[in-house]
Each structure stands twice: as C-alpha cells, then as structure tokens.
Image (cartoon, rainbow, N blue to C red; front, side, top):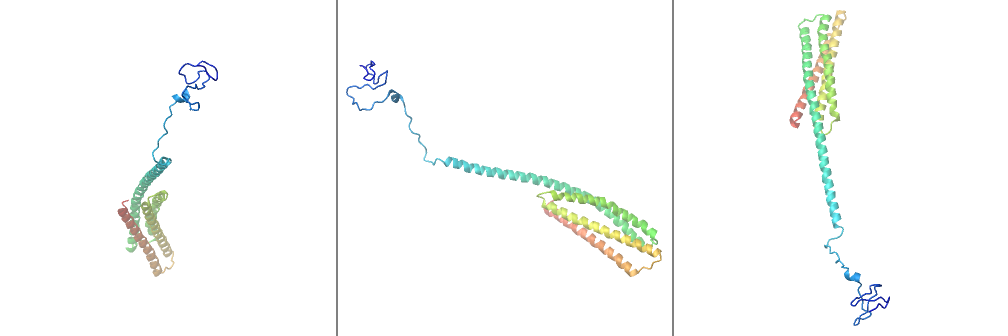
Length: 254
C-alpha cells in the first residue's frame, strides 16, 4: 500500500504514513471518522484536580487572623517585660535613694540633738544667772551657731538625694516618701533659722544693755517667746511629717 499524499510505501497495519503522517484509509471506516494521531494515542491526560468545598481565599484569611493574634500577644508580652524591667530598675533605685536618705537623716538627727543640747544649756544658764555678760553669752551662742552651721552640708546632701526621685518612673509611693521628707527638711531649716534669729536678737540685747541702752523687758520677753513658739511649731511639724513617713512605709511596704 502506498500513501495517497506522498506516495511513500506504507507497511501493512499502519494507520499513518511514516513519511508525512497522513492517515491511511482502511476499508470499513468512514472517511469522515475522526482519527487519533499517534501522539494523541500515547498522551495520557491527567484528571482535573478535585478541591475541597472551601473558599479559595479562606486559608490566607485564616493565616492573617492567626498572624494578627500572634502579633498582639507578642506585643503584649514585650510591653509587660519592658514594664517589669523598668519598674524593677526604678524601684531598685528608689530603695537605694531611700536608704541613703535614711542614713543621712540619722546623721542629721544626731547633729540636731547636739544643737538642741547646746541651746538648752544656754537657756538654762541664762535663767540661773550664769550668763551675765555679752562675752559669756557669745561664747555659748557661738557653739550653737557652729553646731547649726555644721548641719548645712548634711541638709544639702539629703536634698540632693531626694531630688533624684524626680527622674524615677512607676514609683509613686516612693515619690510621696520623698515629698514628705523634703517638707521635713524644709521645716528643719526653718527651725534652725528661727533659732539663729533668736540668738542674734539676744546677742544684740546683751550688747545694748552693756552699752547702757534701756531695753523694754516686756518687748524682749515677747520677742523671745515668739522665737520659742516658732521653734516649737517647726519641731511639731517635723514630728508630724516623720510620723506620716513611717505610716507610708508600713502601709506601702517601702
């Protein structure tokens, strides 16, 4: 058999011309019957993919929700850690500053006790008549002035330590402590100021008397009593503030 298209000899049983690929018409087959090419015969078509009945974008949306939740959780954890770390640091610093203030306060208290004793002795000696001249008064008054002057560096150091609380965060109870101690220091300075003014006034009185200047006894008594009252009020204020600090320490476990 020969190909009708190119004339090439075709082997028996072949469906196509080996030269041009033209289909071989066999008897019994309609000329219009479709003929499958060798390539088509050997090609195996894969069945169409079968998908689950789930919207195509659902997996992406689900992942987005999960990622969003994870981001929120991570952010919350980070914020908690940051808060705890910073709070811990500031609380540690607050405790350190507080310890320093208390230590300095003990030293100041000792100095105030010494000052009080020198002033008390001066008052007792004046009442008993042991202080009769300006020089005698000044000798004891200078000891009291010197004792009060020695307290100034200690007071300044306490103020500097209390000022450090201003830069701390998350330690409001400790800041309240610092505020109370600051008010206490203010009262201490005011009390010492009143004591100094009283000594200076009495010093002037002695010098005036020795110079022959007449002094109004009632005025002197009123003036001295006024200074004494100021000192007592400041002393009471100091005690009141100290009690508030102790109460705060107990209630807030500082």
